[in-house]
Length: 76
Image 1 (cartoon, rainbow, N blue to C red):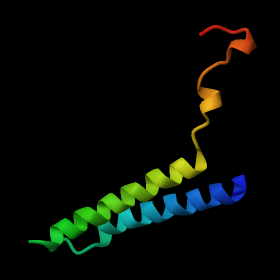
Image 2: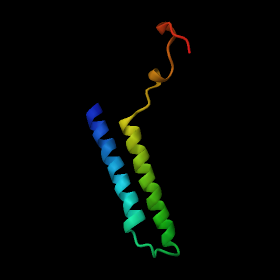
Image 3: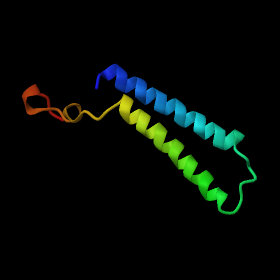
Image 4: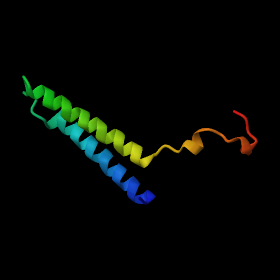
């Protein structure tokens, strides 16, 4: 997958997660009681997962960047 497409997908995921979190906080019926509060909690976790997944898509782990190699001549 191209870097620009991956980053656009990540940004869309972040925006969707933030919109879902705002809806849960500001727009969702606050009268959800009983078992519906578990549904609200699950939707909140999905919003967190979307934001985390979007950030992971935008900034992927690069194992070669995390540790300096011995051939660089630099020490940690």
